Picture 1 (cartoon, rainbow, N blue to C red):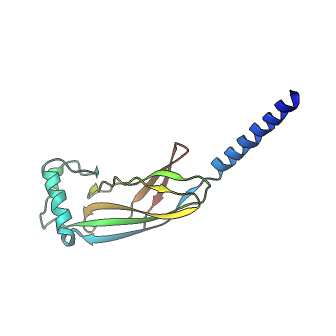
Picture 2 (picture 1 turned 90 degrees about the vertical axis):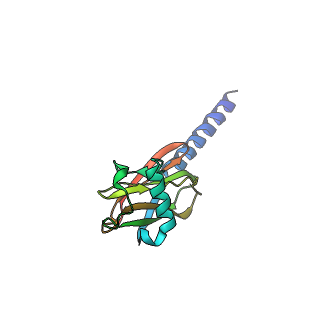
Picture 3 (picture 1 turned 45 degrees about the vertical axis):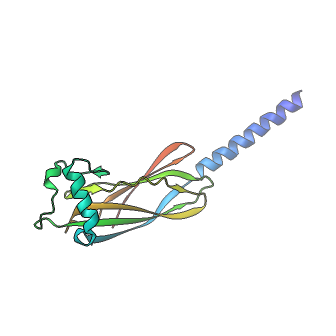
Length: 163
């Protein structure tokens, strides 16, 4: 009976060490961030949809403008869509699940468009995430980008400043 207990104790220690190794070697990193901006006038359908949602106070996504009545199609305040392409890498042996990108707002930002896609980054892989922000034209595209992901059900957040 004693040899079986010793073997089982060793097996538990080996499996625990292996689990700890898998957990500690998991690393998701942001490789690069490349923002691309386009004037909202080139995306008229999307812009008009957002205006209609704002008028109905039903704008979806992360709304940054405290008073939506300030958001209008007035030519004095031109808007632009900024798409952040975020290259991510998972160097661990576990998949990263529920990846979500959040752009920290600055003065002039209106909304980060809602993305309901469930994202997963398999182990030992790379991927590209996109986040679209509607902001006033002429505003710098440099923002703090927060990437939240889950490993084994535990949340982790990376914060990086975009160019």
